[in-house]
Length: 151
Image 1 (cartoon, one colour):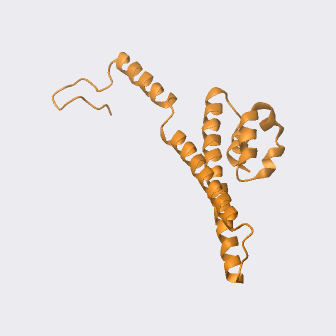
Image 2 (cartoon, rainbow, N blue to C red):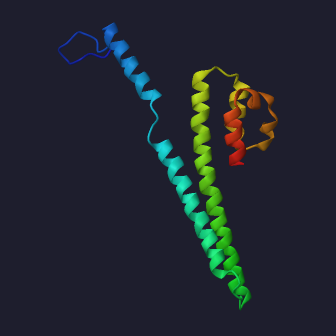
Image 3 (cartoon, rainbow, N blue to C red):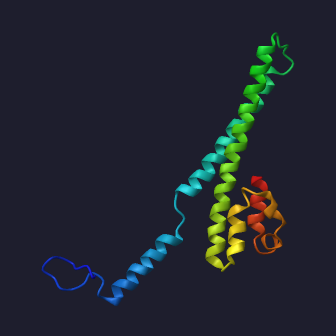
């Protein structure tokens, strides 16, 4: 059922082929642009990872060559260091996984892939066994490197 401009008009909303082409071209322009969220996520995660790495280093340098008096103090220091290391790994993984996701869509937009190759691309960050897929290394070198760095 066609939608109409207003209640009194009998002209359909998209009756003109020119309007349809203009709508498609503006849609193509919208989908070809990079949305601000992906770069913002990559950059902010990278910066937070660097900040936590510096914090991890500063924490251990502060307590370097200082005697620990109790086992509780030792446990707290180890736990804080582990928490810093986890945060560094997490933020770097978010940054590289976001870059990986963007690169997948760019790659799929450029050339057609089989369903099994698409499955491999989307699952490689969850299953390291997909690194054995020769197609990944031959056709998608950049994706393979980003996934390897993420692992």
